[in-house]
Length: 449
Image (cartoon, rainbow, N blue to C red; front, side):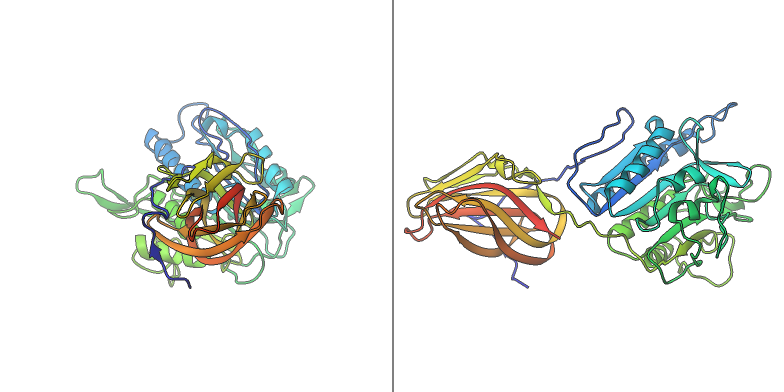
């Protein structure tokens, strides 16, 4: 591994906070963007179904907490899949959106990651996910918009979404899929907490009874949840308290944080259980507040999130950049931004000894991988191009220099692979020794994961 150094003076010093949201279905508008080709599409749905014909279904606190939790989960998916994540909340999470997003991911990506939190309905042997207005996204409809090969990781936080699954089959009737596990996976052979296969599906069974903590009582105390006239609980509300320190929103938040950090599904559940419950997810028996046996993992829970193979690119220029060195200069630093060469060019010039310039770009996500710069040196000038990387915009690692021969046209200049995380990239050119004038155009920078 290359030694980490702090770059001073002529090298790369500045501060940047990344903000990149290529696609969001938010509370006010619904927009499809233009995406770089990526291997995995990830979707986060929150219908916040608020009306059942006679009154509100969820409390105002539950609706608000669900929204902030959904926004956090989206941030984790965006960190993992910056060019291919989708989020739909509240009024925008209707049946049309459910259908269009699941179909879009199936038709445009190699793998799918799906999360949804909300209510469900039932009709005969079939169940549905209820959208914001109470319309039903039925299992047999979902089946037509998902794939055995593509749907690798699914978590459906709606009531009893781990039920209606028959190991070995059949899991279909004349209408199509029966139940959510088969609808999303097309797989008749998903073992409970299994260790083989290419898919994992998470959902909830009934819990009888569920013991929760209630801080509103005087004194605060644990008690059984009574729901719909009985003790069966098909999935927890986010606002329900597990103990004096955590509610169920923290289960969702911690799970997705752990997954984004690289945990397998099994390890993510174990880690969150230690953090919240103080014990492993895998416990003997099934106590009144355990997740094991209630939150089910069908299929291979040794799987983590599928990869995103799309190259990272410079999405913005850091404040304070570019920097001119000596009598050299940088023009149009924004020319290095973008997911592909586009003819919008940055230029670095340094004719005298010690002249030149450098640009600090912010990538559209944390990455490790092979670094390439798309550049062309002006005829008659052999420009020495340098690249540096950093994960904090303070400590920098040099990736070496490459001489770009003048007059040879546009080329991808390879700076090798860096195997630790970074999100900032510095591109510099200067006449360091007095005999290598810098006169170079740069169109794009990419990091292939």
